[in-house]
Image 1: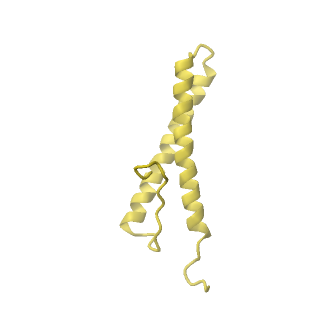
Image 2 (image 1 turned 135 degrees about the horizontal axis):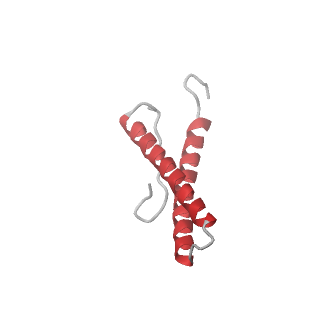
Image 3 (image 1 turned 90 degrees about the horizontal axis):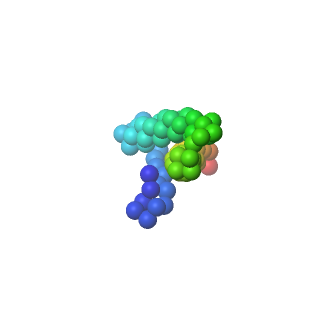
Length: 90
């Protein structure tokens, strides 16, 4: 997800089981699934020697969008994993 001016949005919460956290997890899962589907389509276009410029540009555009989403998921999850664990002291 992004803000209206295109900046990425990240969830910051201490409640991993809360409604917003579960919603964010569901969105991340959908983004990863979509990325897998886009990757399959892009590979099919690349394997088709007869694919025209429009098909290749479309596949590359969708792949770039999916990569952006999946990288955002990775950054978000990495930040959560790197955070302090419950019971850790400062």
